[in-house]
Amino acid sequence: MRRPRDMMRLKTRKRRARFALSALRYGVILVSLCVAVLPLYWMLHEAVQSAAYRFVLPPSLLPRDPTPSGLISVLSGDGPHWLLNTLVVAVGTALLALVIGAWGAYALSRFTDRGVGAAAYLVLATQFMPPAVLMIPMFRVLVDFRLDDSLPGLVLADLVFTLPVTTWILKSIFDAIPVDFEEAAMVDGCNRMLALWHVVLPITLPGIIAAGIFAFLESWGEFMFARTVISDPSNWVGSIGISSFLSEYGPRWDQVMATAFVFTLPPVILFLSVQKYFVAALQGGVKG
Amino acid sequence: MVSRGLRSSDASTASRQLRASKRTWRRLTPYAFLAPTIVALGLGNAIPVAIAVRLSFYHTSLAAGDEQFVGLDNYREILHSPEFVNSLTVTAKFTLTTVIGSIAIGLGLALLMNGRFRGRSVVRSLLLIPWAMPLVPTAMIWRWLLNPTFGLISWFAQSVGRHGSPEWLQDPALALIAVIVIQIWQLYPLAMVLYLAGLQNIPHDLYEAARVDGAGPWRAFLHITVPSVSGITVVLSLLISLWAFGRTFTIIFLLTAGGPVDATKTLTLLTYQSAFQTLQFGLASALGSLVFLIAALFATALLVTTRSRRAATT
Image 1 (tube, each protein chain N blue to C red):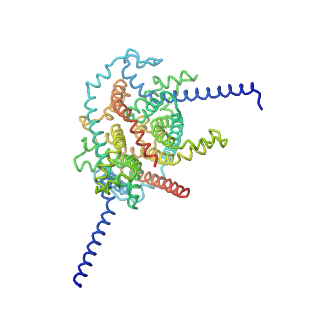
Image 2: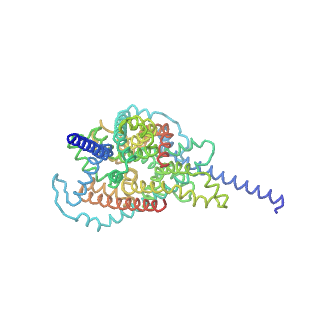
Image 3: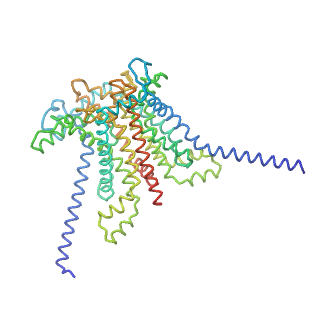
């Protein structure tokens, strides 16, 4: 048996170890937090800091002489036009991806036929070919339909690239819903289509919104296709606009940072405001 | 009697036909649901893939319609070129470290976020931000942060180390590491969210039982946590490796454009450049087809082994 003093010593040692452990834990959390948000913060920092300090060392953690003039010049220049184009493309892609993806995802989730399994594999197989190679034939098709250099053309191109993953997310969301719900509805005389519309879709609405946000984010930031499909400046989206500041003589950082911030803020705010649904939807998918 | 018998057999064939047509209808239902997806991906993906594969057997020149069948020449040229070997090595390094890095960091942060502490939900939301940031702005801010003279990270490195700041994106030894770190920075949130979900599904009794049996936290992690989330690990390795292997483009293109001295020229970059800068569509298509082939083999092998292992355990 241990003497009481030893016990006391053991206890304080344990307490110390626990304290060290929790200090370490908070330290790691703090560092990860800084690494995660630093780029976004620094974008804002550089966008509002007075241009005179851009090349002054050492950098200050808070922007010196903050001025909104950079942001104002973006918003009074081409910014709103690019924002609107980006918004049209992202919303169009997300809606189409949801409308098409929901049907397919429902089939992938509810039927176990051999053909359905093959279809699931083919949806995954779309991720094998590098997009750069597909751009040439896709661009030719868009030219044939006179959709090159137009926002609808870009929507179709983005759709092809977001649909597979959107379908997979939707499938995992449907997987989490027990089949009993629809079967009850189908016994009551609903057919599958009505059951999907009246029973499954309302329950999974948060997850569907999350899948839509995914497609929205992907097409909001898409660059390679926008660069290939779009050339007329009146059709430029944000990602082309920002990269256009990369001139031969090096980037014009003031405009780059202000525009980059203006284009980063909407998707980040949108994502943060729905992330609860997003996380819940993905978590539902993991349970299966 | 006879007529009645006939009629009843008539009725039974009719009902049999009805039942049969119902059955075929039922068999076709899934494909009716899948039709829009199949049409969209068939037109948008399968046909372009087929065109690209066909083109990979042709020599193309700038003049429109000038295509010449060359058999496997494009492939032969690629497999013998040191550029391809370099790109394959770069891509392998890039893919492997990106997958391992985002999975490890995602799991680590998920374990931290699974514990209770003040402000957990806020911290969790903020940790997801890198995922929501669009590619081009992300590439731009990292380029500025890594600017060798005025970048914040360079300044930090300079004040910590004794030597001047390294030229992150101009140094062949560092550029690939820099690009990988940025890629992991953007992908760990996905891993974290999925792992967090997986962790919350592990029954607490398991850990309780392990503690009673005298297992420390490390052994509990190895024998309970890791096996419980193995399904998520498979999904994540599959998705992230497919993306890193054949689809990562924008970040590298805007940060290093494949340089310095091809140190970050992944297969995607090489394919893009041979298609849009040297305009060799046939060669680019052959490169793409090789990437397609490798990705297909890898994904299928991963799926088959995990499926057979799952079948063995259940």
